[in-house]
Image (cartoon, rainbow, N blue to C red; front, side, top):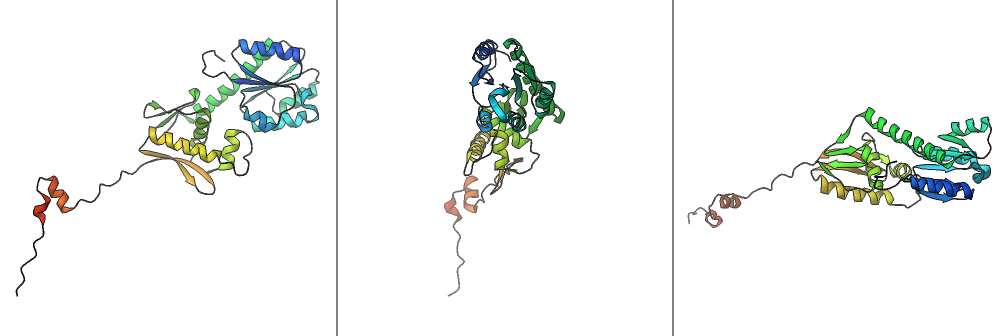
Length: 272
């Protein structure tokens, strides 16, 4: 990570080894990372809500659910670096952890500087993969919108659209859906990172905000379409210009400089 990024990315450290954690957090701060320390096993949705770039976890803290946790979190958050730091482990355990979805496995005792370097390496791989996937598909340009994925930016008609990170992720998800209708539940799972609670209207609220911003930035295009009772579809459609209102004979002549009063219709004289 470079120091000039606006918002430092976050590492969640799940470990109750106070001496190791203290030194690790100091090294993370020096490298420009934000960090959160948890000394007990968190819920998957609680961890996902923190939106970390990486998680460094000691499986001993997770207890008997450690393997289940690793697998579930890796499946739920494939874009997040998952690094295991374990005191004692066999070859079979390391292989199992890596196959379940961990990106790296470090045996303790280890130097915190090495852990930071491995976190940086893992997150670089994730970011490189994301950029390569976009590159393989070609630049993402639709309507007047251009997605600059490497910068987390959207530009409309040459001007940057002011979006929050979550608004950007939601819009990018819709734009990559190839015109398919995405159910609200799927959108929430993929953007927020965990299952949507009954009655939660977060997706609708964010779509409404996105529409407002897109209409201001690109008023001649419609992008997000509602499928009532299901979800949303992205399709760039140019708005049809409204036809000019019908013009009365009086208005037309007045525009030509003839007073409308002279257009009174004279009834024909009828024979008595």
